[in-house]
Amino acid sequence: MSRDDDGGNSSYGRRSFKRSKAHFTDRITADGRDGWPVEAGRYRLVVSRACPWASRSLVARRLLGLEDALSLAVADPIQDDRSWRFTLDEDGRDPVLGIRYLSQAYDRRETDHPGGVSVPAMVDVPSGKLVTNDYQQITLDLATEWTALHREGAPDLYPLKLRDEIDEVMADVYEDVNNGVYRAGFATEQEEYETACAGVFRRLELLTDRLERQRYLVGDTITEADIRLFTTLVRFDAVYHGHFKCNRWKLTENRVLWGYARDLYQTPGFGDTVDFDHIKRHYYQVHTGINPTRVVPLGPDLSGWLTPHHREELGGRPFGDGTPPGPVRAEERVPAAGTP
Image (cartoon, rainbow, N blue to C red; front, side, top):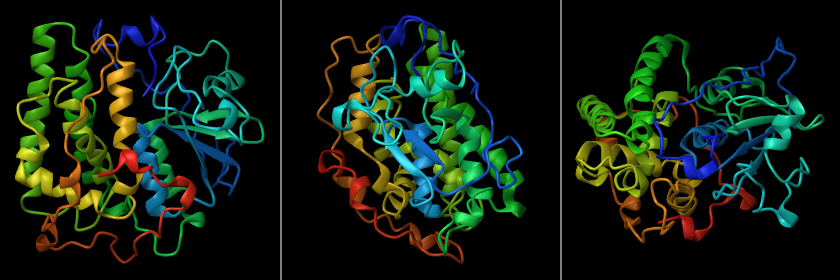
């Protein structure tokens, strides 16, 4: 998720939406072929808990047990026109990188870079330079290139034998759901909005048919495909239904998807990374082109996220032959204001 470079936050919702491709696409790999070898403690993952694209990396990092190997910086959910800032930290600086704005790490890598400043971002701690903001690739590499640093019992989130099917499902989910809600929410013309909104619900209905028969999207365990769908579904009623006008029905009104989302939310590594307070304040206070008053709604009621889902009746093994991640470390716990 990035700030639009033309006009700052007020530009959201005032012109047609087109998602920028990641400009920095270097990869952190086991063999270091791009100059960035996997190394414990070398990199810092910068996220916003408000951002669905960044939240993917939060979930993957927890499931794979990379907390000791990959440190975490959480940006303020409220951007200013310099984008993501570290005002949640003492003195408004990231304690490891020593910077006030994520843009400083971008500028150390390349001045006058295109595409804005987005999260998730991987930053090289020794140099303070951005390595990559390729949100599509970061989590896949955490699953496949960082295996030497995975915890014992870490799940295989991108199993080789299922990759073709996972890729196909993820492509459809990205086009119609992950990105579709944004195309609907930032539409500036009626036809543009209606096309995007119809695509969102058409795909959700197809996913409903799929998930009525099986617990997870691909195979009988959690994969990267589930992570990518979850980060949109968990925001659906809180922001996409109202703020982005994706309101044909609420997630809570779809028995299958609501059960699926609750199942994942209650799985260690998913719900314990979600901060509904950050989510709501970011969308309603930053997108002033859509919500000029910046008033944040009181609802929805979050208590339902903790109710029984009964999805275990479909079988499946959440972590395959592995185990759940351990408790969230104290400094990374979501404050009570952001939880059910």
